[in-house]
Amino acid sequence: MQEKGTFATLPALMKKASNSRDRALRRLVQEHGSPVMAISRAALKNQVRRFRTQLPRVQPFYAIKANPHPEVLKTFVACGTGFDVASIAEMDAVLAAGAKPTQIVYANTIKPVESIRGAVERGVGLMTFDSEYELAKIAEHAPGSRVLARIKVPNIGSVVELSLKFGADPSDAMELLIKAHRLGLKPTGVSFHVGSQCTQRENYIQALELASILFRDARLKQIPLDILDIGGGFPIRHFDNEEDLFDSTSRAITQEIERLFDQNVRFMAEPGRFFAGPAATLVMRVIGKAIRENKHWYYLDDGVYGTLSGMIFDHAKYQFKVTRTGRTQLSTIAGPTCDSLDIIARGEEMPELELGDIVYVENCGAYSSASATSFNGLAPAKIVMVP
Image (cartoon, rainbow, N blue to C red; front, side, top):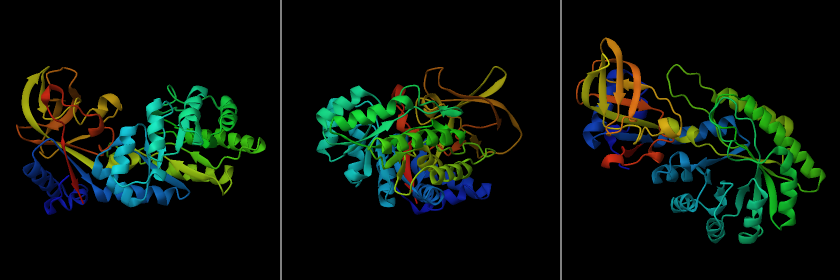
């Protein structure tokens, strides 16, 4: 949450010569201790610009579950994005950051009655649903609300499958939209999610085709829809040698939007990982070492119960980098807790490390600090905002 001139060039330095990068990391640890996560405002803003450039017809609604840090939310408020929230607590966090109720979509398809009422009290009137039971709740406790029918679409190739738990069958969606109209709600559109970290752009193509059929059918039934929420899933790179799939994915989406939909249709999306992920670097230090299984083991001051929790809950895989050079050997890295689950990675190629050496991870701003705990009384990484 602090900003120091010392780290003003950290995001740029991470891409430059190793000596400059290593000095910046050491200064970060000297100033703030470790573990520490540096989140770059410039990188956050750059992701928004990139999204808007590649998907000009799609209005982004940041999925704050990816990283709800107050300064991250304020940065996106300043960028004029919308926000996808899943609870009243998330709604309040967005409003406290300066967003307006009209910038929020309550995108959890299963909502407690108290939360539906709370959304009305806060002026949030756009919600998703995927069942008749949810429509009945919304109609009773938030009459007149605008609603989006979430449909189930293919999630093949996505790291996190999101159609197992949510989404009405497309064949049932039209009847649900008609039911919403009969209940006095305002059926406004359709939403879908192709799965988190989607590596198959065909998922978007198939989902857009399914949605376009519903839009045409709704128009024939005199229930004109004007919003399509294409969800999230936009992939980022976690490893240096990975292909950046966003440009090709966004081109395919834009082509299908222009082919399948009228110009009066408004498009929304819910990027979470794509906005927050590339903006953060996690810096850890070696706090212990041993030789086990004929390999070096290095114990770090953060792990899977802390800021690397995305390895458990998000199925994330990270590239672990070090500032020390030399001949590498197969090594194991583990976290600081007393639980054997807290083994971060086996078979990592690393030079021999010493106590106090730095290990760092880039592109880890999403689904990391958001799910971190203080298990064993060990606090997760301190978050530092940098320009």
